[in-house]
Length: 342
Image 1 (tube, rainbow, N blue to C red):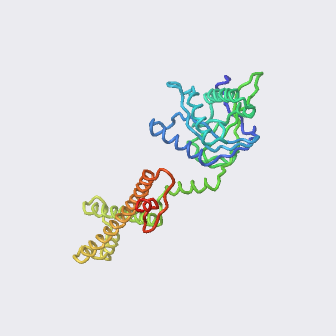
Image 2: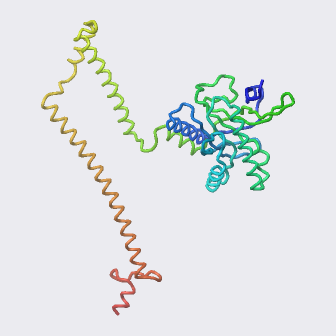
Image 3: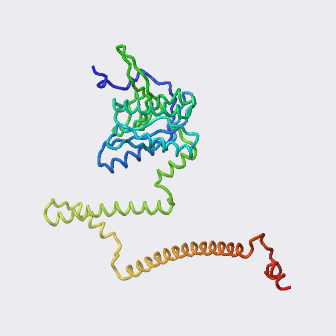
């Protein structure tokens, strides 16, 4: 069998000794990257490529952050190393403790195409080690990790070595010797999801729909959902009565009597008193909302005026007193004013 046709992933009986921790931010970044490219390209399987940032202590690795990678124009199998180096340097300025430890993609399983991309990543790490003259990259950066998002997988089997319900698989590269020939392959590495206190707060905030969520908004959303469901059911009843009148469905007298009793139990809502009371309540609510908006605008304007006064007084003092600030004398006059009047 040709090597390209063979699986590039070793069987599950071969385990990795890597201790891998995956943080929530890479999961969110990779999912967002995949969703955005799928909508932009209108394809269910777009080509997604990105880099993994994290830390390593021996065989313990943490994936903390990610960033997207670019490819050469017209060549999806060739990474733009200039863009890669530029983005790495930018992240290094903000997160000096994070290192470039691997890359991610979207695929059902790794293939020979990923082996070719992996060789480019390995060459980049070797170049990085030679540029920085740092021996700490030599042992690990020659074998960058691969993190694969598998959207088609819903739930893993019980024999899954990661034991995770997330559609992610982590792979560690290695060399297989078969028939006196060597080839690059992957070993599936177990991982665990690890979160800090700040990450748990951020994930919980994101799961609830972002900022600005209050108890009032939750109550109103619940009320809206209830009204929407009631409206849909009323439409079903109206459609049923319409079909009965048109003779399209058989008449069910039990159902019609139930509908008649339901309508009779409803309060009369079209009389003049109800309409006047409803209009009054509606106007009160609108007036309250208007006053709230007006109060908020007044506070913003007040803050703006205060800031303008502070800047104006500060610039005036700078123009009149190039040296040290003068102290206030009696009756709100400057000490310099006493000299002028003396």
